[in-house]
Amino acid sequence: MIPTQTFIKENVVEAARRRVSFVFDHFETIHVSVSGGKDSTVLAYLVLEEARRRGRRVGVFFLDEEVVYRATVTQVEYIMEQMAPGHVIPLWLQFPFALTNAV
Image (cartoon, rainbow, N blue to C red; front, side):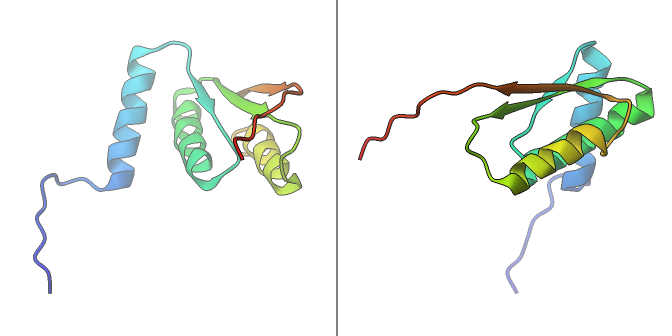
């Protein structure tokens, strides 16, 4: 077995919640950007969990590139509408734009 070292006595979730709490302690306006993927969904969950606990609202921003999978749109709708009803300020920006391809 490979020896491991422990430097702090808190796990990743506890550390993330502590950091999110710090943001709420120091900022009045908070926005979280989501892509619909797993990482931004987890971040949105932690932020909205703290918003519910404190009775605050948080902006949830999504940049819709108009060529995203339907499952992505469904996930973003879930985050904005069902994850924390009453605590989300939906910020859904959609506009057509072209991405260059270097190939």
